[in-house]
Length: 253
Image (cartoon, rainbow, N blue to C red):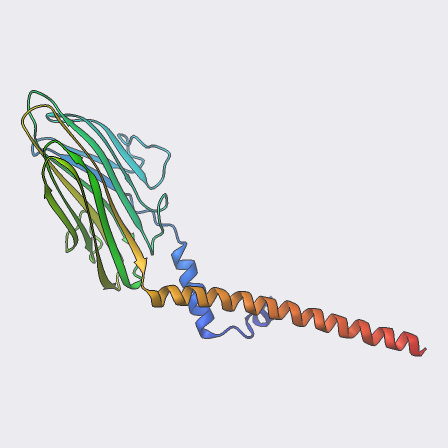
């Protein structure tokens, strides 16, 4: 067995080994217990992935809440992250919500979505995007936290609003170098004042590898394929040479 492994490893260079490790890390599944929190200042709802009040039971990496929070009498809120979206090295976090306040009152609703245990990938581009519509006022923030704390707000990577009544959208990118496991948290703040109003939005954070990382990934894959092709070609040539030699000996006899 050891000899077989050694034979298979012959010719594999250090860059190829680095690329293989990079690929394995990128496809690793993180189970970080993504969590939603909705609060109007007096009532707070906490929803953990696969927890008792998760509206998306059975969807690992998806967490949802359907119900009231104070005077916000209807909220349909979902959050998605790895392994449902993205990977632990290149995560995608998506928060969506439709929030309706009653005619008896409104106030301010804060919605937070967090997940931990994302793997560092060196210099990376963090892209934040938001879009939606409101009958009140809305604002949005996105954060990463190198202490890997749930709901950590160590580093602000995106800030949007305050948006007034009507449609809105925004986006920005930030390049950061991270060398420790980290968390991502998205925060939406909705102010309806008083009266029956509705807001809806989608807030997204995704991580895009820097071109150098992408190039290493592609080069590593090409090198692996090339190595396999050359090995098969050499094996075929060796078999053909043996067959030719045996045929020549047969004819000679």
